Image 1: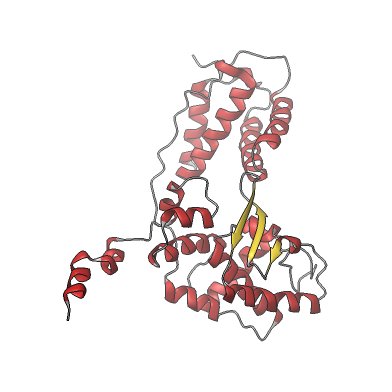
Image 2 (image 1 turned 180 degrees about the vertical axis):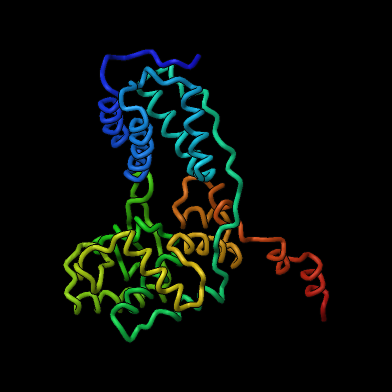
Length: 302
């Protein structure tokens, strides 16, 4: 049960090479990287085994060992997705992975900043320095627009319009989307662009590294994480990551009365249900400002 019918007598390593090239056409680079990693790991455990030699039971046992070794629910789900993708490609309807069950991923509380914490983060950016000027522009743009790390790092100067307060960027999935930002953020960006010129940045992207081994070059997602850790420490947060601002963007917008559909469009989500996923910090207490009784009492007040 669950055996893969061979397509051709080639090694699993060669099949993975071909499959990765197929993935590069259809999915994001991040997905390609993670999926390939999981399949290379599987192949390394049995280098003489071809794709058609794997069975459903063997795959399930291997995933069970990963779980026993400390792999979390989300990682296990990603592993199953990668196996299903590869073995379906390699074995078609005889894929041994199609009966591998998906692990249940329990919802965990995600870190979202409240208004006071967001203000503390902005205050932690010392605009008397070039670093602080850049960091405030980064934080306010991401908070205003919900940009992902990869998106803000690849945002190009030619695609930023301070007058119209708009930008274009390639988003997750490869599509080009438009976003807008506030006047306050436009001011922060204008100050950064002036400082950026003074610092001699040569990259075509809006945000550049400052200091380090390659000053003035494109800011990377790894560098962005380091920047956020430092800002968070100055703001008194135990932990602070770029993705926290995507959740905070959606949550504060909803609390300010923005309709869910507008938040979806502004955050460039393809599915409105993602807004609900990113606003888990919303609680019943947020309904207080919309109390029907309070509204009626105000209406009847002389």
